Length: 272
Image (cartoon, rainbow, N blue to C red; front, side, top):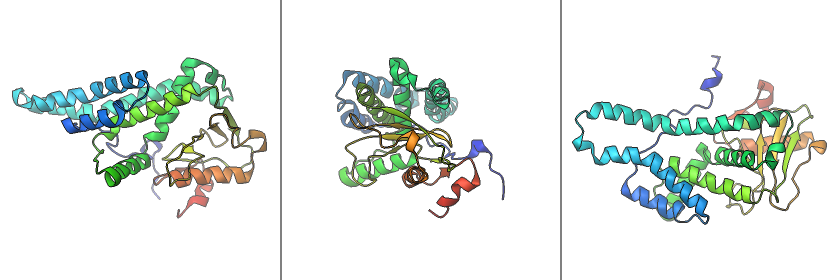
């Protein structure tokens, strides 16, 4: 069997590439997301995001006939379309690294710090929303129920949805507990191409409650509880059956890939 380099795992080329938005696409994003935002901070964020990512592409498209060197501009625009959102994700992941280091040390004090808490909740909400499974399900629902093609809009709009979720979680942070799961069972946690799951969702109907589970290593995971509810798990009482359940949830929520630190950790998921 050929060895796969780790930086080639779960790579979907141009997955985050921006598309040139039409006037109808812009109207759709404004109607579906921007105008629907209930908090002024969300409206401002969404408007700025839409302008910063869509404006360069729309400007070139609308003024193409006036350019003398279209080829060089097209090369630049193609590079921008490919890299702009990847760079945005990269900056977000970089800002999360100090928090991840805290988690790996067993330190959750960042949750009590306003700025760090914002960074954490924005990151975990984006991790939940930006996946292939979420994209395909959302686009299909909008197409089948509303006859809306949201495919060109998704890579921008998803960050608006993520911001809304993160803002809502931040406003409720004092009602939601953050728990560190220490897995001492010997059965490791796995992760997947859907790295977070809502423990209160059944996978069919839209959930009306949210409790994120996010494995960060084979022996550590985070659970963000629903508002005013106790966490579904406790570190001191975590059993093999609990770990199996959490691993099954990760597998079931994924699009096509599950990841573990050893081959043995992945054997239970072969053929699923």
